[in-house]
Image 1 (spheres, helix red, strand yellow):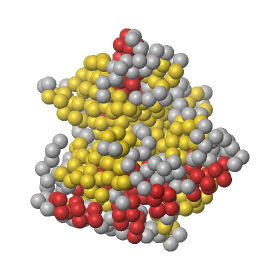
Image 2: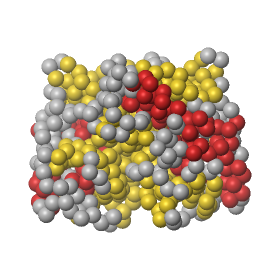
Image 3: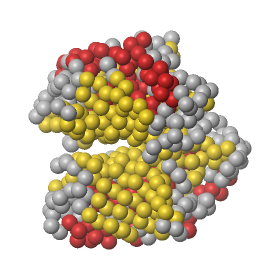
Image 4: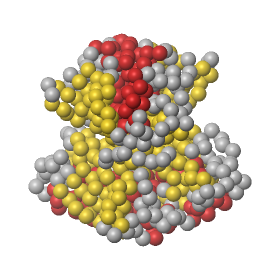
Length: 151
Length: 151
Length: 151
Length: 151
């Protein structure tokens, strides 16, 4: 579903908000793509975000998935709104053993109060994408709080 | 439910495995308590794990909750087993704005193949605990893989 | 958590709304207990609600759990409000092979817009309760729609 | 993902098992389509499966979604296997107010022990499909239990 952006400044809002999340910098996450209702976030595998087998930690996979869904929702919001993660559910399908982990978030149900997103997470090895996790997420719109997903 | 440990070395196994997770060190997470079938993990709030409002990032809350549940399951396993997170669902109930965030994981359904856990996450401010998130998690036991939760 | 009812008529509202749900009558579900923020619903096992092994169908377990959580939330609402199920997650822990299946719903996080509940479902055989399913559920309050959970 | 059937008799197995579920008959559910790894189940709206607003009860939506995912998984199993619902998560996106409710289940991750499915549920009014619910479901394969999803 290609959404209309609700705010002409949507892209600057997404990039500014992302830049202010210390936790995203800590794990080395980057905005890979932004479009109205669709945001991709990726992270390169390195020891500081691994579990004991050398794969990317499931919690880090969850972090970038949660943010990809949250910014996908935020990108479609009206001016002056922000977004809160209400809940999410994640299935870990295969090890996050790629060179890069890429979370592709998209709005599946826009709404005035609640927005539902789904996120497909891929483990990318030598350019080949393998689905490694799925998330479904519920966001709540907060009118009059203007600075991004409050994850 | 107080579980019997399946391995006399359960506590050393949990502590060793936790110590090998680079991602837990990166966010500053600590094992706060270990008992058979019950593991608490906490993290002190600091800028490197915050979102843009200064609260602990929801993804970090998810990381410590996922690990608390995973190690709660692992603490009850037989020798030579490890544990894989199959899926989890998290509800974020209130902002993680405490000085410390504390995730208390416990096994609610032990099993030979699958183990179900629940995790209550508290935001702790001046010693007062406030429930800020709930997780329900499904783990899978991997016989013959001996080193902890593969989150 | 013992909640204050938001409406002095809360009990009549819950009972009236339940009585108007054709689907609850179809499966033979009954209100077993109502208190502010806590509602139990039960069903007796019989062939019309079974799966092919003679256990109560997981979908029927889901129906009574969803309704128990929904009415738990509704029982704490202000006059004139109704409640909508936004999402739920259910873990099926053991077969629903009891004489009676009993779903105990309770509000874990009240709220003006969103309410979170948890439901423990028991399989009851000769008076002994065995936990057979867990649900976590998000409800949305609808002001000015006055007749119960819109599941 | 188009899957290979694991059993040449897959279609007869699915239809036989479905026919033995009393609960599916009780709500009037039908198998609308079966393919390896993909099963659609539908139900016509009528008072016995409604909630108090005349929409199809969310629990009934959950029942057909759970079964559509379960039979999608079962259709890809080896001879002699059956399938157990471990857990599912459902988001209700809009009222189930159609003439027919149609749940389209598909396997998203096949596996020897665990199978993950997703189900899109549509409210169909005068031939127009509207997405009304999403489910993600985890199934467990039970070798040597030969008769379908044990939901």
